[in-house]
Image 1 (cartoon, rainbow, N blue to C red):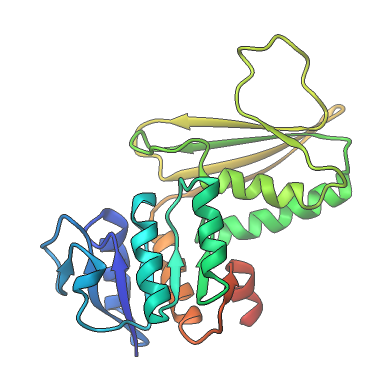
Image 2 (image 1 turned 180 degrees about the vertical axis):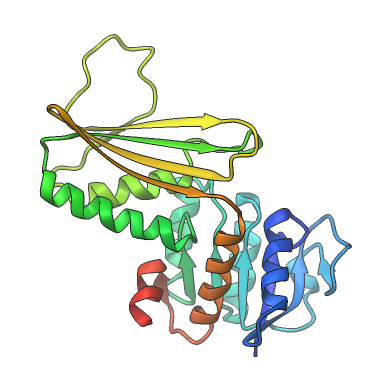
Amino acid sequence: MKKVVIVGACGHMGRVIADIIKGRDDCTVTAGIDKVGGGAAFPIYPDFSELTEKPDVIIDFSHPSVLDSMLDYCLTNGVPAVIATTGYTAEQTAKIHKAAEQIPVFFTFNMSLGINLMAELAKKAVSVLGGQFDIEIVEKHHNQKLDAPSGTAIMLADAINRELDKPYTYVYDRHSVRAKRSKTEIGMHSIRGGTIVGEHEIIFAGRDEVITLKHEAHSKSVFAVGAVNAAVFLSDRSAGLYAMSDMLADK
Protein backbone atom coordinates (compact mmCIF):
# COMPACT_ATOMS: atom_id res chain seq x y z
CA MET A 1 0.00 0.00 0.00
CA LYS A 2 1.66 3.19 -1.21
CA LYS A 3 1.43 6.22 1.09
CA VAL A 4 0.52 9.39 -0.79
CA VAL A 5 0.63 13.07 0.18
CA ILE A 6 -1.51 15.40 -1.96
CA VAL A 7 -0.28 18.96 -2.48
CA GLY A 8 -3.27 21.22 -3.02
CA ALA A 9 -5.44 18.71 -1.18
CA CYS A 10 -8.31 21.14 -0.55
CA GLY A 11 -8.57 22.29 -4.15
CA HIS A 12 -10.92 20.71 -6.66
CA MET A 13 -8.32 18.37 -8.15
CA GLY A 14 -6.97 17.47 -4.74
CA ARG A 15 -10.42 16.37 -3.62
CA VAL A 16 -10.96 14.35 -6.80
CA ILE A 17 -7.60 12.61 -6.35
CA ALA A 18 -8.44 11.77 -2.73
CA ASP A 19 -11.78 10.33 -3.81
CA ILE A 20 -10.15 8.16 -6.48
CA ILE A 21 -7.51 6.86 -4.08
CA LYS A 22 -10.26 6.05 -1.58
CA GLY A 23 -11.60 3.46 -4.03
CA ARG A 24 -8.23 1.77 -4.66
CA ASP A 25 -6.40 -0.89 -2.69
CA ASP A 26 -2.84 -0.14 -3.84
CA CYS A 27 -2.47 3.33 -2.28
CA THR A 28 -3.79 5.54 0.50
CA VAL A 29 -3.66 9.25 1.38
CA THR A 30 -1.75 9.87 4.61
CA ALA A 31 -1.79 13.69 4.52
CA GLY A 32 -2.37 16.78 2.44
CA ILE A 33 -0.58 20.09 2.02
CA ASP A 34 -2.80 23.14 1.68
CA LYS A 35 -2.96 26.56 3.33
CA VAL A 36 -6.77 26.40 3.38
CA GLY A 37 -7.07 23.27 5.51
CA GLY A 38 -10.05 21.34 6.82
CA GLY A 39 -12.77 19.21 5.26
CA ALA A 40 -10.66 16.11 4.59
CA ALA A 41 -10.57 12.60 6.04
CA PHE A 42 -6.80 12.93 6.54
CA PRO A 43 -4.56 15.55 8.17
CA ILE A 44 -4.02 18.81 6.25
CA TYR A 45 -0.85 20.77 6.92
CA PRO A 46 0.00 24.30 5.70
CA ASP A 47 3.66 23.44 5.16
CA PHE A 48 5.86 20.43 4.37
CA SER A 49 7.83 20.91 7.58
CA GLU A 50 4.78 19.76 9.56
CA LEU A 51 4.48 16.35 7.89
CA THR A 52 4.82 13.71 10.59
CA GLU A 53 5.23 10.68 8.31
CA LYS A 54 7.37 10.28 5.21
CA PRO A 55 5.20 9.33 2.20
CA ASP A 56 6.13 6.96 -0.63
CA VAL A 57 5.20 9.61 -3.19
CA ILE A 58 3.80 13.14 -3.49
CA ILE A 59 1.16 14.24 -6.01
CA ASP A 60 1.18 17.97 -6.74
CA PHE A 61 -1.90 19.62 -8.25
CA SER A 62 -1.48 23.04 -6.68
CA HIS A 63 0.31 26.21 -7.84
CA PRO A 64 3.77 27.03 -9.25
CA SER A 65 4.57 29.04 -6.10
CA VAL A 66 4.71 25.79 -4.10
CA LEU A 67 7.43 24.24 -6.27
CA ASP A 68 10.52 25.31 -4.31
CA SER A 69 9.31 24.13 -0.92
CA MET A 70 8.03 20.86 -2.39
CA LEU A 71 11.28 20.08 -4.20
CA ASP A 72 13.28 20.96 -1.07
CA TYR A 73 11.24 18.46 0.94
CA CYS A 74 11.44 15.74 -1.72
CA LEU A 75 15.19 16.14 -2.21
CA THR A 76 15.92 16.20 1.51
CA ASN A 77 13.81 13.12 2.22
CA GLY A 78 14.25 11.19 -1.04
CA VAL A 79 10.53 11.28 -1.91
CA PRO A 80 9.35 10.82 -5.52
CA ALA A 81 7.10 13.56 -6.92
CA VAL A 82 4.30 13.52 -9.49
CA ILE A 83 4.09 17.11 -10.74
CA ALA A 84 0.86 17.91 -12.58
CA THR A 85 0.69 21.66 -11.97
CA THR A 86 0.96 23.97 -15.00
CA GLY A 87 2.12 27.54 -15.53
CA TYR A 88 5.79 27.06 -14.64
CA THR A 89 8.45 29.47 -15.86
CA ALA A 90 11.46 28.22 -17.80
CA GLU A 91 13.54 28.62 -14.63
CA GLN A 92 11.11 26.49 -12.61
CA THR A 93 11.03 23.81 -15.29
CA ALA A 94 14.83 23.72 -15.16
CA LYS A 95 14.62 23.16 -11.37
CA ILE A 96 12.30 20.19 -11.95
CA HIS A 97 14.73 18.67 -14.43
CA LYS A 98 17.61 19.26 -12.01
CA ALA A 99 15.74 17.58 -9.15
CA ALA A 100 15.15 14.52 -11.36
CA GLU A 101 18.89 13.88 -11.24
CA GLN A 102 18.47 12.91 -7.58
CA ILE A 103 14.87 11.67 -7.18
CA PRO A 104 12.18 10.13 -9.39
CA VAL A 105 10.03 12.90 -10.91
CA PHE A 106 6.94 12.36 -13.08
CA PHE A 107 6.40 15.60 -14.95
CA THR A 108 3.84 16.21 -17.65
CA PHE A 109 1.50 19.03 -18.62
CA ASN A 110 -1.41 16.64 -18.98
CA MET A 111 -2.16 13.38 -17.18
CA SER A 112 -4.82 12.24 -19.66
CA LEU A 113 -4.10 9.04 -21.58
CA GLY A 114 -6.09 10.42 -24.52
CA ILE A 115 -4.04 13.61 -24.74
CA ASN A 116 -0.80 11.66 -24.71
CA LEU A 117 -2.12 9.43 -27.49
CA MET A 118 -3.02 12.61 -29.39
CA ALA A 119 0.59 13.79 -29.05
CA GLU A 120 1.84 10.51 -30.53
CA LEU A 121 -0.63 10.78 -33.42
CA ALA A 122 0.48 14.36 -34.07
CA LYS A 123 4.11 13.25 -34.25
CA LYS A 124 3.15 10.58 -36.77
CA ALA A 125 1.19 13.14 -38.81
CA VAL A 126 4.16 15.49 -38.96
CA SER A 127 6.51 12.70 -40.03
CA VAL A 128 4.18 11.93 -42.96
CA LEU A 129 3.12 15.46 -43.92
CA GLY A 130 6.51 17.10 -43.55
CA GLY A 131 6.44 20.84 -44.14
CA GLN A 132 3.56 20.73 -46.60
CA PHE A 133 0.84 21.58 -44.06
CA ASP A 134 0.42 24.62 -41.81
CA ILE A 135 -0.02 23.74 -38.14
CA GLU A 136 -2.38 25.51 -35.74
CA ILE A 137 -3.27 24.54 -32.16
CA VAL A 138 -6.49 25.72 -30.50
CA GLU A 139 -7.10 25.14 -26.79
CA LYS A 140 -10.24 25.89 -24.77
CA HIS A 141 -10.59 26.02 -21.00
CA HIS A 142 -12.88 27.38 -18.27
CA ASN A 143 -12.91 31.06 -17.43
CA GLN A 144 -10.99 30.58 -14.16
CA LYS A 145 -7.80 29.23 -15.77
CA LEU A 146 -4.88 31.59 -15.22
CA ASP A 147 -2.24 30.56 -17.75
CA ALA A 148 -2.48 30.79 -21.54
CA PRO A 149 -1.72 28.98 -23.70
CA SER A 150 -2.29 25.85 -21.68
CA GLY A 151 0.62 23.67 -20.66
CA THR A 152 -0.96 20.90 -22.70
CA ALA A 153 -0.97 23.03 -25.86
CA ILE A 154 2.72 23.71 -25.34
CA MET A 155 3.33 19.99 -24.73
CA LEU A 156 1.62 19.15 -28.03
CA ALA A 157 3.59 21.82 -29.90
CA ASP A 158 6.84 20.57 -28.37
CA ALA A 159 6.02 16.99 -29.41
CA ILE A 160 5.42 18.17 -32.99
CA ASN A 161 8.58 20.26 -32.99
CA ARG A 162 10.73 17.30 -32.02
CA GLU A 163 9.69 15.59 -35.27
CA LEU A 164 10.64 18.52 -37.51
CA ASP A 165 14.03 18.96 -39.17
CA LYS A 166 14.04 22.62 -38.18
CA PRO A 167 12.17 23.71 -35.04
CA TYR A 168 9.13 25.89 -35.75
CA THR A 169 8.47 29.07 -33.80
CA TYR A 170 5.31 29.46 -31.69
CA VAL A 171 3.14 32.42 -32.61
CA TYR A 172 0.62 33.46 -29.95
CA ASP A 173 -0.75 36.69 -31.38
CA ARG A 174 -1.17 37.92 -34.93
CA HIS A 175 -3.35 41.01 -34.57
CA SER A 176 -0.41 43.37 -33.99
CA VAL A 177 1.49 42.36 -37.13
CA ARG A 178 0.13 42.67 -40.67
CA ALA A 179 2.04 39.93 -42.46
CA LYS A 180 1.43 36.62 -44.15
CA ARG A 181 1.67 33.49 -42.06
CA SER A 182 5.16 31.97 -42.05
CA LYS A 183 5.45 28.32 -43.06
CA THR A 184 7.76 27.66 -40.11
CA GLU A 185 5.39 28.53 -37.30
CA ILE A 186 2.86 26.83 -35.09
CA GLY A 187 -0.07 29.09 -34.29
CA MET A 188 -1.30 28.89 -30.67
CA HIS A 189 -4.80 30.10 -29.80
CA SER A 190 -6.46 30.21 -26.37
CA ILE A 191 -10.18 30.41 -25.58
CA ARG A 192 -11.46 30.93 -22.03
CA GLY A 193 -15.12 30.60 -21.12
CA GLY A 194 -17.73 28.95 -18.97
CA THR A 195 -16.85 25.63 -17.37
CA ILE A 196 -14.96 24.00 -20.26
CA VAL A 197 -12.77 21.36 -18.66
CA GLY A 198 -10.31 21.18 -21.53
CA GLU A 199 -10.38 20.89 -25.31
CA HIS A 200 -7.35 20.72 -27.58
CA GLU A 201 -7.35 20.70 -31.36
CA ILE A 202 -4.43 20.38 -33.75
CA ILE A 203 -5.16 21.56 -37.28
CA PHE A 204 -2.98 20.50 -40.21
CA ALA A 205 -4.03 22.74 -43.12
CA GLY A 206 -2.69 21.90 -46.57
CA ARG A 207 -3.63 22.65 -50.15
CA ASP A 208 -7.34 21.85 -50.52
CA GLU A 209 -7.43 19.55 -47.48
CA VAL A 210 -7.43 19.80 -43.70
CA ILE A 211 -6.64 17.14 -41.10
CA THR A 212 -7.78 17.71 -37.52
CA LEU A 213 -6.88 15.91 -34.30
CA LYS A 214 -9.13 16.77 -31.35
CA HIS A 215 -9.41 15.76 -27.71
CA GLU A 216 -12.13 16.74 -25.24
CA ALA A 217 -11.98 16.19 -21.50
CA HIS A 218 -15.49 16.07 -20.07
CA SER A 219 -14.39 15.72 -16.46
CA LYS A 220 -11.27 16.54 -14.48
CA SER A 221 -11.33 12.99 -13.13
CA VAL A 222 -9.42 11.84 -16.22
CA PHE A 223 -6.42 13.87 -15.03
CA ALA A 224 -6.76 12.65 -11.46
CA VAL A 225 -6.85 8.98 -12.51
CA GLY A 226 -3.69 9.51 -14.55
CA ALA A 227 -1.95 11.23 -11.62
CA VAL A 228 -2.76 8.38 -9.22
CA ASN A 229 -1.57 5.78 -11.72
CA ALA A 230 1.62 7.81 -12.16
CA ALA A 231 2.15 7.93 -8.38
CA VAL A 232 1.91 4.16 -8.00
CA PHE A 233 4.20 3.71 -11.02
CA LEU A 234 6.76 6.23 -9.73
CA SER A 235 7.01 5.11 -6.11
CA ASP A 236 9.45 2.27 -6.85
CA ARG A 237 11.51 3.93 -9.58
CA SER A 238 15.09 5.13 -9.50
CA ALA A 239 16.00 8.80 -9.95
CA GLY A 240 15.06 10.26 -13.31
CA LEU A 241 12.51 12.28 -15.24
CA TYR A 242 9.45 10.24 -16.21
CA ALA A 243 6.45 10.97 -18.41
CA MET A 244 3.28 9.24 -19.58
CA SER A 245 5.18 7.44 -22.35
CA ASP A 246 7.32 5.70 -19.73
CA MET A 247 4.30 4.52 -17.80
CA LEU A 248 2.55 3.26 -20.90
CA ALA A 249 5.68 1.40 -22.06
CA ASP A 250 5.81 -0.33 -18.66
CA LYS A 251 2.37 -1.91 -19.12
